[in-house]
Image (cartoon, rainbow, N blue to C red; front, side, top):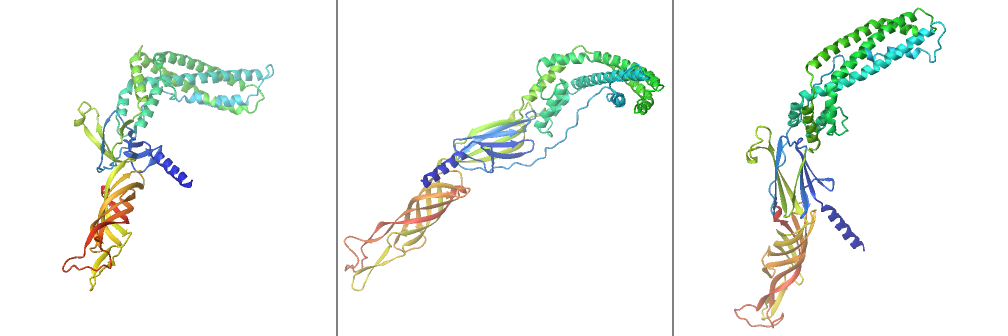
Length: 513
C-alpha cells in the first residue's frame, strides 16, 4: 500500500510539472524570467506537447516591433544571453498656465474666522454696543460666504484654463511622450491617462465617454462668463470690506463688553488697507485676463477635444505587451526574438531593412516523451558460472582451470528512455562491450540488456544493470573433464557457447555533449 501511495505522489508531482512555460522579457529594463503555474523557475523546460508563451512586457509598440521564430529541434543550439542596456530616464513636468493671483492670499486669511470665534453666540440686541456687535458679526459672516464663493469660482476657472492650455499646447508633446525610449511604457500610460483626465476635468478613476466631449466644450466656452461672475463677486467683496471698516470703527467707540474682541479688531484695522489693495490688484489682473480671453475667444473646441478623446482610449486600451506562443514538439524548442526599431525614420521600411536593436535566443528543453540515446563508459560484469580454460595432463586427461568470473568491459549502450524532466529518467538499454583484458576464457565482445536511469540536471550519466551474454569456451560433445583423449599435435576439442551473467554500468550520455 505504501508503494502505491509513493507512485501516486510521484505521478501528482509529475502532473504539476507538466504545465505550459511562460517566458517573460521586460523590454524597458532588459530583463528576462521564466514561470510555470504562476511560480518563477530557473530553467526553461516544458513537457513535450505543451505550449510555450513568449511575453513581451513594458513593450513600447510606438517605437518597437518584434519578430518571433520558434524552431523545434532534436539538437540544442547555443542560446544567446540578453545584453544589459541602460534605458532609464526622467520625465519633465507638464507646463501649466494658471490664472494670475490664483493663490488669493486675502481670501485665505483666517482673521475673519478668528474674530467670529470670540463673539458669543445668541447675542441679544438693545443693550449698549451689542447691536453693533451683531451687525459686525453679520457682515463678517457675509464676507466669509463671499470669500468661499470667490475661492470656488477661482478654482473652477483655473481648472478650466489649465484644461484649455493643455488642449491647445500639449497634443504634440503627448506624441513625443509615447515615443520616448527612456520612460517605461507603464509610466507613460499612467501619465497620459492622468493628463487626459485633467483636460476633461474628471477624476482619474472615472472613464471618459462621448458625452464628455460636448460637456467639456461647453465648460471651455463658458470661461468668460464665469470670469465676469467672479469679477462681480470681487467688486461686491470690496464693497463689503468698506462696510466692514465703517462697522469696525463704530464698534471701537462703544462698550461691547467682549474683551477678547479688542485685540482682533486692532489687528483687523492694521490689515484693512492690505486686504483692499490685494482685492483691487486681483480685480485688475482679472480684467486683463478677461480682455485677453475676449480677443482669443473661440466658439467651438470640439475638434481639439476629440483628438484627446481618441488619444485617451488609444492609450487606455494599449497594454504595452505582446504574446507569441508555440507548441513544443521535439527535444528542444529554440525561441528567437528580434526587436526592431520602427521610429519615424524607418517605420515604412520592410522588416528586413529595419534596425535590429536586440536579438534574444532561448533554448527550451522538453521532457515527457520517449527518446533514443547513446552512451559510452565502463561496465562491470560477473558470469553466473566462472569461465574455464582447458588443458591436457601428461597422461592425456582433459582438465580445466576456472577463470575470474568478474570481467570489466568498455561498453556502448543504446537506450530508450522516458524523459521526466528532472534529475531522473527511466531507461531500457541494449549494448555491446569489449573486455579490458585478454584471456579469462571470454570471447572478444559481450551483449548487455537491462533497465537503467539517466541521472543529473542534464541527464549526462546513465546507470544501468541487467543481464550479460558473452561466449566462453566449452568442451565439445561428448567430451567432459577427466576424459582421456589422444590429439597428437591437434587442439583440445572446444567450442564457443553463450554464457549468462549480470552487469552494472556507468556510461556518459553522448547527446549531452
